[in-house]
Image 1: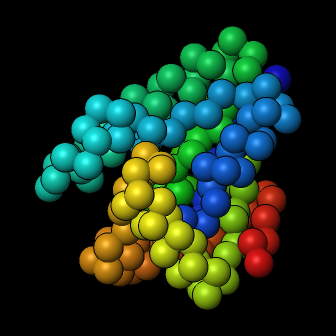
Image 2 (image 1 turned 60 degrees about the vertical axis):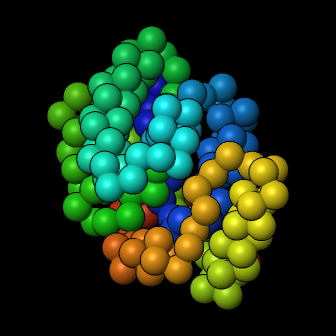
Length: 160
C-alpha cells in the first residue's frame, strides 16, 4: 500500500535534496509547495505568500490522496515546521486510511547558517531557483520552527 512521507526540517536543511533521493529510491512523487510558488509567483507573491502557501498545501493534500490511491508513494516537501502542522497531517492521513511517516532532517545551527549563505550565493548568481533568505526571513523561520519530539519522528536524518 502506498504511503506519504513528510519531510521536516528547517529552511535550507536539505529537505528537497533528501526528497529527490528518496523519490528516486522509491519511485515516489514529490509534492512541493516551494516548487509551485516559485513557478507561479517567482519571488513576487509579496504579502500574500503565506496565504498562497496555505491554499497550495490544501490542494496538495487532496492530490496526495489521489496519488496514493493510484498506488504510488508521495513525499511532501514542505518543512512541517510546527507541531500543529504535523498533527494536522497525521490526523488527515489517518482519517483517509493512508499510512504516513515523518522524516526529520536534524541540522546543526552552524551548518544551517552555512547552507543559508551558500543558497543565497547561488540564488544571487542565478544558478538556482529558490527563495533568497534575508535576515528577516531567517529570523521568521527560526521563530516558527518547532523541532519534533521523539514521539513524532519516524526517521531522523542527522545532517552534520
